[in-house]
Image 1 (tube, rainbow over the protein chains, first blue to last red):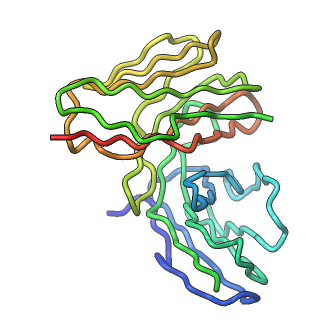
Image 2 (cartoon, one colour):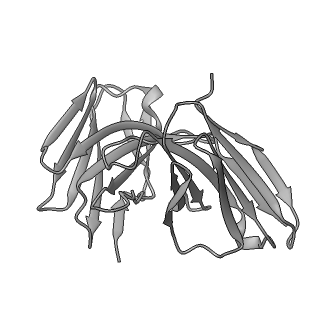
Length: 114
Length: 113
């Protein structure tokens, strides 16, 4: 069974479109994250939710809106896509927000904006 | 601002040798430091966590050190194997509050048979 799953795995779209990426974890974790990994492999946190509550909101354009319908799901909606949004987006989860909890990452969604 | 530095160049070593990867951080006082492995086209996989009051942590062929004075962590893989070839990311974090982890850009390790 996949611990953290994301759909779709690949997403190719044009500038100006709106798209969503879905994430689900079956580990029973309380905390979920969205990360962006750019072409230089820099992995940067975007958002974090704990028990459906937003706890980390980095300096991300407000075109990006996360939504957590329940503890097991964290979706990412992106409006008015731009070329610079092209990257790999990773969802992750951890048991809780404590600093000593490891993170489990999904397989990533490669977003290409043309 | 907080900065995490790892060897940006790839590290090539011969099978059986010990690989040592370096992680330096500045403007930061993390309470924890994690190491992850990332294979091409895959998400990072957790390897080890070390706390600020621990000098060294071991797991099988892996060893991590954490020097809060030098602001540095070293990651060692002993008796390296070609299967250890991957990118290794360090992530200091957990100062307070939100326990956010900041990832380095990783070091690409290649173990030659």
